[in-house]
Amino acid sequence: MTASAAVLPIVAIVGRPNVGKSTLFNRIVGERLAIVEDVAGVTRDRLYREGQWLDRRFLAVDTGGITLEDDPIKKQVGDQARLAIDEADVIIFVVDGKEGLHPLDQDVANILRRTSKPVILAINKVDHYDPLSTAEFYALGFGEGFPISAEHALGIGDLLDRVLKNFPPELEEEETEAIRVALIGRPNAGKSSILNAILGEERVIVSPIPGTTRDAIDTGFCYEGQDYILVDTAGIRRKARVEEAVEYYSIVRALRAVERTDVTLMVLDATDFSTEQDKRVAGIAQEAGKAVIIVVNKWDLIKKSGETAKNFTEELRYQLAFLNYAPVLFVSAKTGKGINRILPEVAKVANEYTKRIPTNILNNVVRDAIALHHPPSRKGKQLKIYYAAQLKVKPPTFQLWVNDPELMHFSYERFLENRLRDEFGFTGSPLRFILKKRAGKGGK
Image (tube, rainbow, N blue to C red; front, top):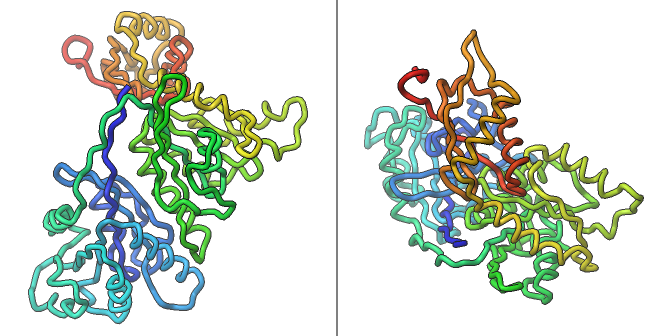
């Protein structure tokens, strides 16, 4: 099994409120993800999504508007935007070309001058370029700037060309036979402690204060003849004014780490579970198509009866229904209980993640599934599945040739997924389906 991936650069989009940062973010990532409304302060939490321009992938981060007002919520938004600046490889500073230079633009510029990161000025809402209308922004000290219209997609290509020129070199990690494993979870769930317990030594700093580990730390080792690389992804070292800002950047780091891994250990705190943050972090691995093991830490602190683990697992399955394929381990990094089960489970799940099913066997199972439960129909037209083949692994991805992809209902796709799991396992691994319309007879 090989492990190889590149670290995604981070592009932070910052500026004062209501200059069009979210519109630009949506334009860059090609989706309408950020809430866009002509009211200052709509974006409070940063959004992040992978974008691509030419041959480079990157992580775009949308931030709330920076303001120096005393309002607590606005201060929180500003704190989070400052964290985005600290984390970014490149910063896009957005101003409003229609409204002109604003005193708050100078306040943002003063903050940005303190960083050594590349800052690219984007003069938004310029539908018809006039050099005289943008000249006043020279006063910010970031050069001529790029006149753009995020709403009408004008000038975006030139802006992204400049962004790419400021990216650090693309370093592809060396391919190895190691299984890459990321530990993700909310700050203080015990990720670093679990890593240390697995290794049996103090290889990373462990602290009860959320946010001890600033950067992902890769640790390689061998266990029972198998090479592993563990990636610890915690929050940030420096103190932040708001807990939300710390927890948000645990998500950004988790996203970066998960991109480079095969198996993800989703670490939960048994004493403090069922938060929305847990769900958001857990969703990262699922959306990235990575194998997942749920590791419930601090199990020693839970009062137990005969069915405590069973009841907890049922609650997990309810709260994290989208990870119902992930095995659950109960451990205590403090006492070491259950730690010795983690690596064997990782090896098992990694094997499932790379499993290939012969085409003839796969089609036999699909035909049996169709006979057991007929495909859905719509307006008198029934879905027909002619053929199936596995296209790739990591994650296992199957292509189905059908008469009309629009006839596939998500519930029937879930049924097919469950049948494949019943027959072939795929423990801990997500499954992906690609529907392709078959041309010719029956496919028209």
